[in-house]
Figure (cartoon, rainbow, N blue to C red):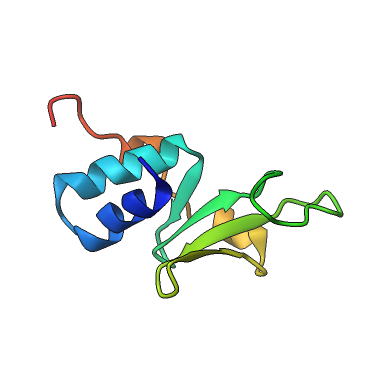
Length: 95
C-alpha cells in the first residue's frame, strides 16, 4: 500500500480499525507518531529528497494540511521523546 493511502486511513478514519492498522504499517516503515503535535515523522535517508550534508540527523514529517512530506527544521531532540512506542501502535492479532 502506498504512503498516501496509509496517511488517508490514519487521518481520515479516526477510531476505526483501519486507522490502527495504518499506524502499525507506518511504524513498520520507520515512521513515528508524535503524540503532542499529532504528526508522523521519519528519519531522513538517501532517497527521501533531503540534503543529508552535515551528517546530523534530519527528519521529515507528513504535513496533513498540504498532504506532503516536509523537512523538519525544529529541535530534533525535542520531538524524539514524544514518539509512540512500537507497543503503542501494535494491533492485537485478533483484530
